[in-house]
Structure formats: C-alpha cells, structure tokens
Image 1 (cartoon, rainbow, N blue to C red):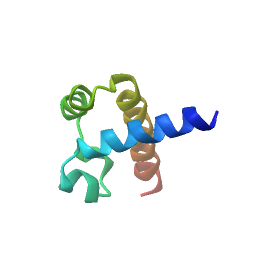
Image 2 (image 1 turned 120 degrees about the vertical axis):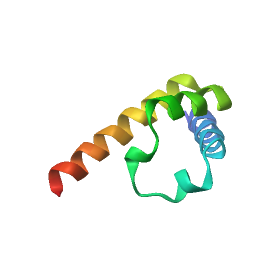
Image 3 (image 1 turned 90 degrees about the vertical axis):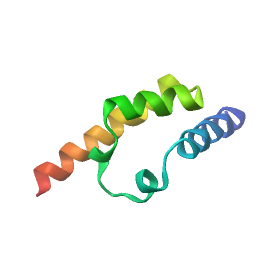
Length: 68
C-alpha cells in the first residue's frame, strides 16, 4: 500500500510539472478547460489521473459557485 501511495504521488508531481506557472498559482479552477486538461494528460502520460483531477476541480468550482 505504501508503494502504491508513492507511485500516485509521483504521478501527481508529473501532472503538476505539466502545468504552467499561471495554472499552478491560480485559485480559479475554471482556468483549465477540457482542451488544456487533455494537453496536460498527454504531456504527462497520465490520462486517467488527469481526468480524475479534472472531476475534483470541477466539483470544487461548483461548490465555490454555490457559496458565492
């Protein structure tokens, strides 16, 4: 289980390395659209994980919209 966690962390680091500074520094989850998300996915080779992260980001964006 510990090894699986380390592998997952390495995958997330790879995804983050594929983002621009603006994308990393922004608190606006809508900054990354589907097209950009696919570029990140192909760039880091982790399509499934990027899509999962996209779902999480979209969920957070909806929560922020409801709270506003």
